[in-house]
Amino acid sequence: MKETLTIAVDFDGTIVDDEYPKVGKAKIFAFQTLKKLQEDGHRLILWTYRYGKELDDAVSFCKENGITFYAVNKSFPEEEFDPKYSRKINADLFIDDRNLGGMIGWGEIYQKLTSGNSANLQPEKKKKGWFGF
Figure (cartoon, rainbow, N blue to C red):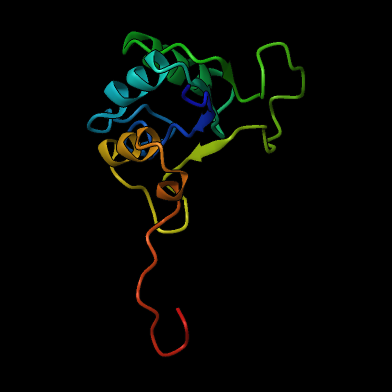
């Protein structure tokens, strides 16, 4: 049986090009990958700094592209908190363009998540230089 994951996904720079406060152009394969992850049974949470009208615009854009999230900026739909303040939510994985090492492509994200090898979720180790970086 496959493991079901709760996956928090950033919006600007991850699902779409970063043009905040506008909604940027969809990243290649972003919506196809998100749909496939939902079909595979994973819970997707939209986790973004946006709130108010800008958040509504992002949620609407995702719905227009076939994605309705399990929750938006919270760990579960019924959770209550002040949406003006960003905080960490409970998720198994976070997909964000600001990850250490940057954003990998959506095709590679899907392959890593469906390979059945959790070691694939870790960034590739690069050869260390003089100072161990």
